[in-house]
Length: 177
Image (cartoon, rainbow, N blue to C red; front, side, top):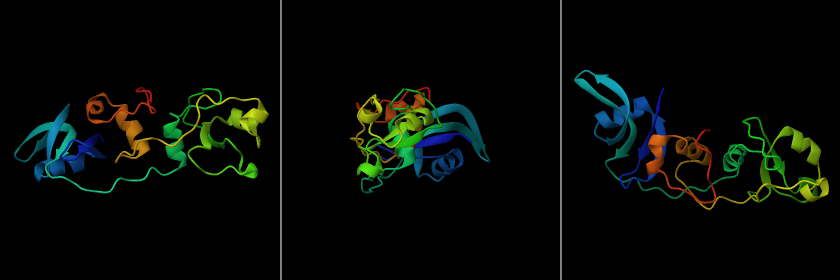
């Protein structure tokens, strides 16, 4: 089922929901259609073009979420790319740049996406000790979107949604993924 980008009243991205939920919000007057996807939704009273982006008619106030360290967030931050060899895949592991045995923690600055081959080569050593170089230094994302990092990666890949999403210089995923 197609998904729909939900915007706050001020056009700030809030969530991604199902088509069914978006149509329900539009029909109950809670949201308005901002952009359509080219399909048609039939109702008892006729129908309308299916939404791709909807905007709430009222402002939702919620605290800024914290970007939490997780496997999915690390893979999304690194754009599913091994940070040692550049191999792009959905089947990656998470590597501690400074191994836990040497005091490395589970932090944004110490975790990177890594292919299995590079992870085996690196082993329980630092990249320097293993003779490997990081493609880019890992760091905490400088933004805090209401969308989770994985939802943001999915959303930025959709042409129709890009106009409504903030662009972050230090996070530029490929649109093809």
